[in-house]
Length: 153
Image (cartoon, rainbow, N blue to C red):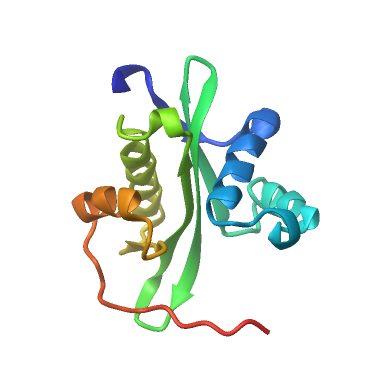
């Protein structure tokens, strides 16, 4: 089944197929209704993928012309490394693709992009209740032991 899966950079022509995935990702994290993202955020996110001066990138998983998943990642500087670090910010697959290697392939795609960019590390975070994703994450990476703190301003 995974033999015909293609992991590739997002293309301008993918917008109408990417948007339902993006909406599904945001719905998964409860960003709907009153807590939905401002549409301007979605427009800006999409535009960043195609701006050579932005450190934000996207990959999609495609099979038979259908997009099954997405991942968004970015590179940033660190005080503990010379090369940029890769942060895998978003990962989402449609429900029917889960458990079939699509998420793993997308993560591996980010690993490849990070290697190409000379990044010494890829990291990400997930919600503590996302047990399904953590089963995969425990197979492809190690927990850092760090907890995330934040303050909305």
